[in-house]
Length: 208
Image 1 (cartoon, rainbow, N blue to C red):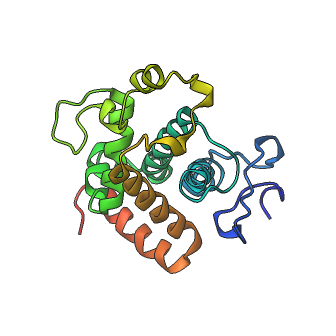
Image 2: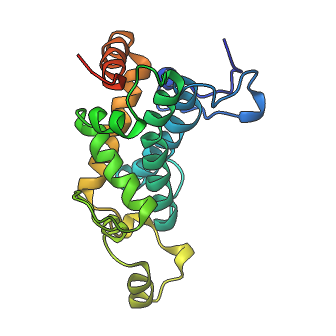
């Protein structure tokens, strides 16, 4: 095994037990390539969000505050969205490949990746001038924290995510679709080969 037993593997989830990566135990660098990035950063961040969902809707696992739920949502979206960058720069050859922006736009043929990017970019840029499902980051939050806190006289640390959904379910579903896209890519070798071939074609200056 290329890294220690403590390392999270998306394919090693069994019976709801999720093992997260311990960076100090790696004997190779977790940011070497897109597969290592997925296994050690992006998918573990997605799994942390999934555990927050378990608490909110199934009352399972650790208690998660509204703020923590939102942080996990945004962290997962950003991490998963970065995977295309890791993929591009791992394989990039300037003599035959198009720009990274061109590659990304083509990769959005996979709808889950486009919707994932809409979330991550709204969060990153706060406000966007070009066409997108999400024009402003504040659309990612269903209701303002301040009005909820003041209106209910509750201390922020005491607010449970189960009291009210903080992120519109449409965006949660989009994050989950993106997470499952990359999780299947890691776990299913046939799927990975198909997606890889498509992404390689999208990188070309003149795709087939």
